Length: 245
Image (tube, rainbow, N blue to C red; front, side, top):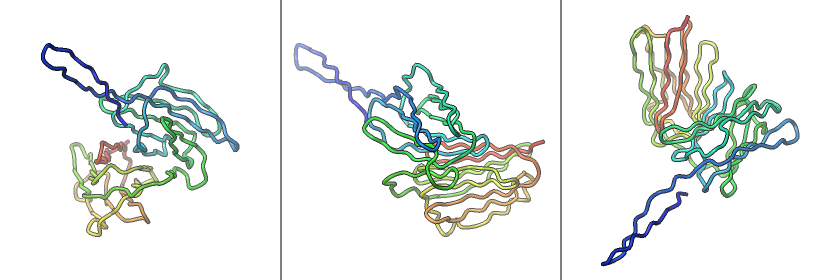
């Protein structure tokens, strides 16, 4: 929820009111320990915010949460934890959002809860590694298109276009496969397919999209060594694959 700052100016004729938006800020990061080497991280904000968008990376093991329109007001942007499988938490601000990154020894399940102006991330909940539990989770987004784009020097790029930003993305490498899961995301029947892009002479051989329960999966099959970079910007997920050594 955004706050409004109201400034009044007096004149000889009639008063006028000018309003300006005050950005929500991330004011504090703290943590507490729970039984079983679990850790609960609290993010204290200046106003209530909706559930953040997020994604996880297996190598290195990280959980990233994005807060659009939120600015940083922290004395320290990195908090060392080193309890159980949780190493540290770092906050970084960009032009239009704040990203909170939780660094782990390895991916474990976790849970997000909100209460007033606080958001809690509990690391070590039951479930599969990297899975996320959101209480009261709403319906998600829809994949609108999957586009392959060959680049220079054998590089390739895959764009996944959504109707709305997905609530959570889990991306990982499994030898010659790149597996990306989009949580609570609908895959239309016409996009349930396998694209053969071998002729473009990039590390990518096929691009497979398929439904997976309430989620959708993107499986990229590769050949030879490769370098991977994947990132999300609003309703667009981009996967960059370049030849490796």
